[in-house]
Amino acid sequence: MMSFTKLVPNVFYVNVHDALKLFVDCLEFKIEHDELDSKNPFCVIERDGLRINLFQDSALANEHYPEFRLVTNTIEDAYEKISKSHPEFLHPNLSKITLRPWGAKEFAIKDKQVGIIIQQW
Image 1 (cartoon, rainbow, N blue to C red):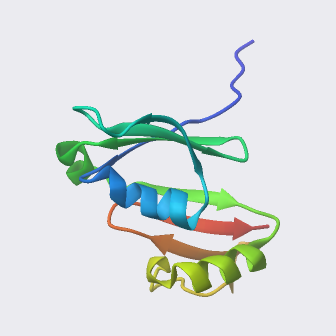
Image 2 (cartoon, helix red, strand yellow; image 1 turned 120 degrees about the horizontal axis):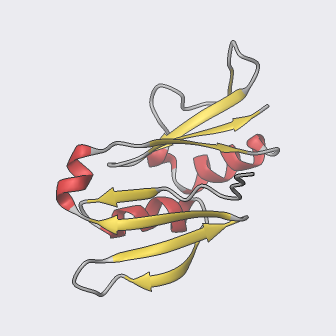
């Protein structure tokens, strides 16, 4: 029987330091593996068992604009923290916690490369 335990996305940025502002400074992920000073900068970030590989690659960054959902049980806390510390990341189309027709409460953030919907069922 096939079994998977984790999905680890690769996200490509023109400048990987833009990713660190969103994921490390705003969402409080921690850098677990750091090759930011290498010829092909990248790092692995992790928080609460979630892992993302961040790469600096202009060509691939220009081809991809990924969107993720982060599911939480404390959406009000997440919104309060992010809206105060990094309001520039709030997505203009979903900048407040909104009860969606499918029953989830959501708000969204984005930077130059990634869209993230924060969701609570």
